[in-house]
Length: 250
Image (cartoon, rainbow, N blue to C red; front, side, top):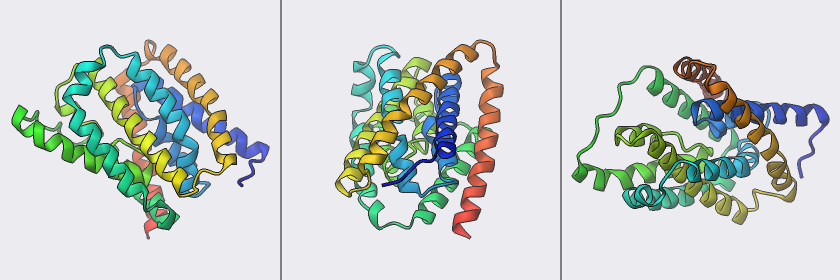
């Protein structure tokens, strides 16, 4: 069972507070920011176990606070089911996967996500016919990525943005997908014995700094340029992702 000394506990508290601030201001990023920073000091499966409850709780709150649930769920049912399947299949490999490789994959994911946000053109809006068959495929890939890295960002975020959903519906759709993925990931990790009691308790304890950070972020949102904040965060994620990828894959 992992033991957290006071300095490590303070570091983890600070990481989840920062992740919560990012999510409060920008509406995304708590698991990606937290995982990227946690992966600097601990194995990926341990980092993924720590982010389970904060990711689940903050996304459930976000999904329920963003308006009508029914229309979003009906439109994205295939996406959600496929994300669940993809997460389950990929997460089933965690107990056999190399921790350094997982950290490197997270780094590549962060680079791809940040580069897409900073430099890449927006995906074109699909026709209804294309959406019907492509949405489950994107959900399957997004779930697979989440099952190996704990992050649901790619390619889910650019795909949902391409659907042209209103802002609240987009936030709700992304939060729902993250909830489906994180619940499936928790079940798969628990079945493989990757969430020992100590990590489960620690994941409960970091709920406090995550929600504290979200509260701070919500207050800061009106005082900051959201676009400028997003650009700064994406640039930081790009640098951190490059470091993780180079450190663990070369």
